[in-house]
Image 1 (cartoon, each protein chain N blue to C red):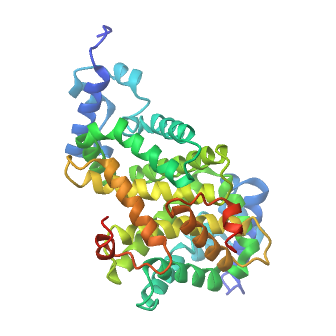
Image 2: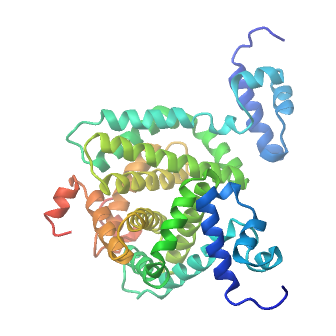
Image 3: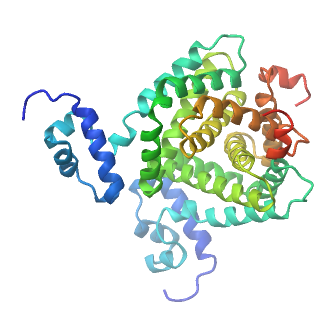
Length: 202
Length: 202
């Protein structure tokens, strides 16, 4: 059992996701996940600190990736353009290939209050880190905070639409569409219903 | 001790806020709050379910008030106008008189992870309820969700600026200013720094 296990992490993730869906996150133990994956609990804990990390282990990578994309955005980009570029970069390089996993993960999180709260905290942390990255670009407050919060609102809503839609529709397209819709919604004097947007070729 | 206590709730709130600031939320017991207020624990529990409710007991009132304001906004108002009207209504009728309490509360919450998370969850719940109110006005998704999330981003940032600023500057003014700034930030081709806003009379 001490031998190297090919793709142990992938097998543990698959087993965990199956069990969370079958019996709920709260009713699944690490011992059961390891057993389903044909591995030991010890191997589980070499890959994950706890059973929640199977769902949130990617949060730090996502945050670092997003911040780096904002840092690397061309200086001529406005704060909002830099954020949308970073979000579509994240979409393309992290999420597009993982539609099924994202769907399963979303369903598991929706079924558990503690996990829903953890997801909100993750988004708030992303907003804080993104605002900080904008300040490094010389964007002052409140523009930095507002753009970062608006970016997370777009990401949250676009992600939700992507997860609940067909895999063929790229998340990056939905993010850009949501950005246009937010822009329409926040423009004074616009009613910004789907109808008025449809007329604008959105 | 069973007698009616004049303004027991106000005395308990004052005692709790003092103790949370002096020794931290996590190191304060209900027994200590009651003692400081010159009341019994039993009286405390007639007013609050637990020590966290001293800080979050107003959440339901806030949500109901905000939703009612969105419901009552004139039909001609755009989704975003309805939300800003609701937020400024909440500011005027609930918060303006409570600047010092809001400052104390914010400092207590900032010092405690659990309370910061609770505050995020409260905001997310407000966004959900506001989006629902917009749908009742006939606003379709994603405009309803985007406007609601944008509204909460404005509220969060405006509230923070109000709490950390002088009591004389009304929260409702800061909300309206933040709305204009969000609009500038999300307009394509706008860099939306404070400088460019200053030139627009914001």
